[in-house]
Length: 73
Image 1: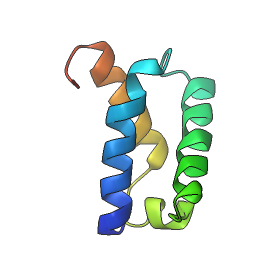
Image 2 (image 1 turned 45 degrees about the vertical axis):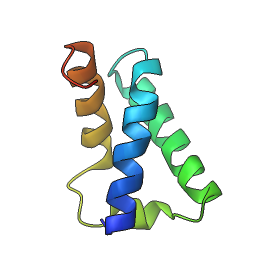
Image 3 (image 1 turned 90 degrees about the horizontal axis):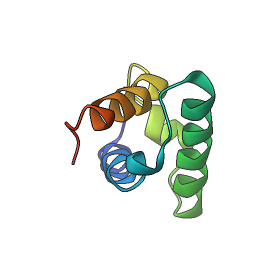
Image 4 (image 1 turned 90 degrees about the vertical axis):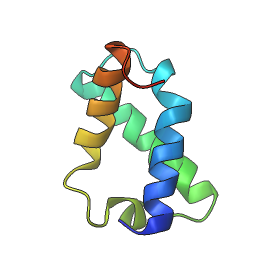
């Protein structure tokens, strides 16, 4: 993940994770679609976000789980 991609993902998760209902597969998939659409709107491709990350799915899912546990605020 490029530095720009990492920064975008971190900021996006901070701004959007509280609105996510749960970490089920459908919710995470919808969040990833929104993440990629928001990135594309400002010129950051999904490839740039995905580079060097084990899994964007895991990053989003983990952020939801940790937020639900009160750890991400």
